Length: 265
Image (tube, rainbow, N blue to C red):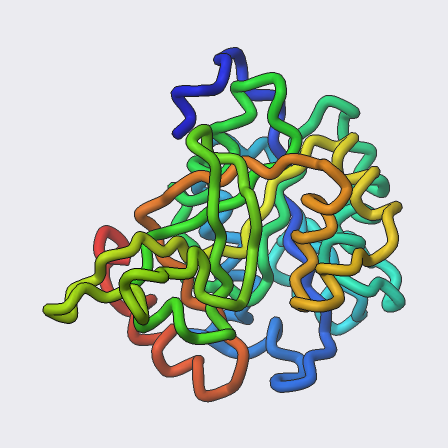
């Protein structure tokens, strides 16, 4: 899809990992022990393997996380505990770090310890096009996955710009109920949204200054604020998969993945 975009040099890219201590389903999960290291360390160390990132910094609201980061020599910025979202925390950290105005700021979720570094390379690749202000990732998904409201879907234009994000199975397959052909095979292409974002600094500043939008509040999807305010989002299809930690029970699968050899992750 990126063939539609004019090409040029990719600006300096800086990764920031929002690591809030509080979590309704799993308080303190960023400090959860995974193979002898806290979860945030795994996210940071894997993000550091992305050659396009000039720096990777943790942004937290809690002294316990900051202390653990210092012991592990992970760059860290202490931010306000009042932020309504991780994106706001990322913006505060970017300001505190005095990152250059032409930077691309990469928002890396702090609960993705199995992050594949090449996904970050995919994420920042559209910024070779000067018109791109925000990017995110998507992957193909099965029709049965698309029916699940906790799996966010995205539909795109031919050039890869997001048209809409939804918890509903979009596009709606009128002629193929459930997205399946008569033989039960997937007939409709569904794209699962992966919650990694990259912003030009200017776009991040604008986004965090906007109030929550109508569709955002309806679907409980922050990225809809961008579309409702005419800020285009470039979607990159990736082969990588996301394995986040929402609950303590998720740790077992994460540990199984991380115990494999790196080439198989």
